[in-house]
Image (cartoon, rainbow, N blue to C red; front, side, top):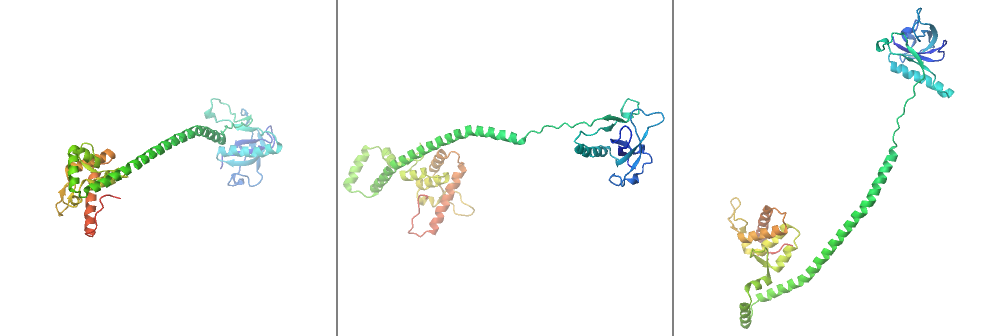
Length: 337
């Protein structure tokens, strides 16, 4: 049998009001007259004890009431009372009628009275104000745009100035290259002419002039020292090609073919060691190799030294392979593309 019920009083002081009562206060209560959901199958009226105030000596007075709903859960009972009260209030456009709120049992109170119900008006719920998320988002966007309107032009101005500086540097480099390249070509032509066999009189005049001019100045006019103090020189054209290399490995390969003759490169490797059971090869000149290392690290300071040695051995292997595949009349390329 379900313990709690919602009744609507038909007569008495609370006629027309809804109350929560225990089913044991309903005289001759029959739970079979209620369906599984707690509603009466047919109109169910019974005598119910009107438990208000202090219990009289002769017992609670009885009034006729209509049983509207029963349940074992008081929460469901209270919700159902609100449902019953709401339609009446909406139809009459009046505030919700009064309901009788149950008093807690004796064991939860210090009062020894038998009061169970108190007449009171339903409490109104306090609704929390929910902030308008749209207004908050709009304020954030306005704040972000105002900050961006200040920062973006400044950043754009910095990038524009940096771009102008790079353009000026490129123009300077271009003009320097255009000025120096004709001189380098002219010097190369002069070197090629001097390599042809001159006449006896020319030889004598050259020897007389060379005796008056220091040997170091003539060497410097035709060649470039790859690293200061290394005393290793290469042709100016080869040095110009190396300086225009776009990577450290290309720089190393160009210096290698410019510093060492081709016949030495074909029979050598970096340390003179042989792989597995292959032929023993001679080691490259340590002073020249050291000059290549120093020149590379000066131009490319972040390069790992072991990469330079790997590049040298790879270039030597490439030259030997090309020599095997080429025909005897073809010549090897001394500089990388």
